[in-house]
Image (cartoon, rainbow, N blue to C red; front, side, top):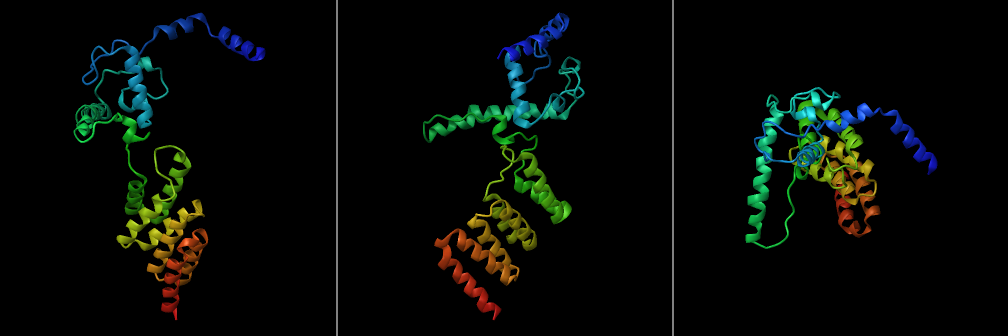
Length: 254
């Protein structure tokens, strides 16, 4: 305890009184200019909290919307400028959010009077500037760059965002997505992604069931039977249901 207090005291003494005074004098949120959506009489604290909420909700930094260079003092930024399109779009989004909370959410009370959840930027954005679902990202990768790039993109996003609320990496997301791919006759892509999910969720009955269905559709009899048998081991209650599928496949193979 004493050593920790001594360390803090040493750090404090190393900071010059001049730098402390300069830091205390600078308030980038005071006397804002060119406010068009936020209240003109907004306090410094309210404005600061609002900006921090935007940053956290969208995974953004000051330079995302404002004119200034990353990793430079904020008092060098031109916060009044409307040069950046992102700032102009932010105003539209603020108006939309306000209307949702002031008009549409209270309108639900016409159906049932109940406490309502306030919609915020983070509600949809989940820490992303473009709030795409993982399915949207995978669709784009498949269309533009093919299967290998799609598998790599999924791995990259999982490595960077797993545990956050930005993308859904839960058990059922990929199996449900690959079923949609199968409807579009993208069977091999669906199988590859289902196998990825099986690697992450080796005890997922639904994953191995879906994988078995996809393998069956592609004419891969033995792998399909193997996947169904794995599903049976995970969920014995589905044994009769899946054994009928296995018998069908064995009959077709004879």
